[in-house]
Figure 1 (cartoon, rainbow, N blue to C red):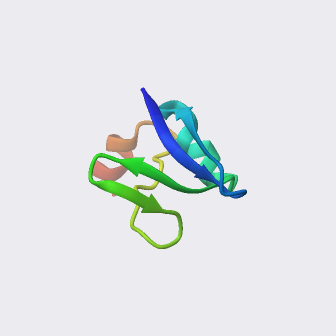
Figure 2: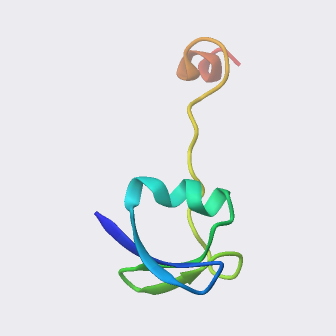
Figure 3: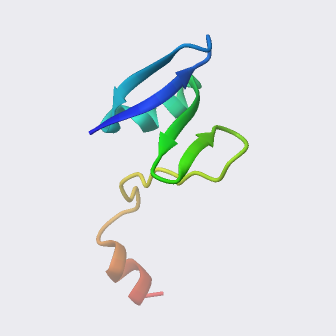
Length: 66
């Protein structure tokens, strides 16, 4: 899936959905278009990428044994 974005230079373009989180993290885009309209980075709420669990062992067993 391709997503419309606005780059820091003001130019617009299309990027692959899988690249969106990286572009946000690297502050290369100012906004992106989603189904309900434009999301402006730093102004509108956006989801935070979930990174893999970095703890030791199984996440559930760590929680249950606490």
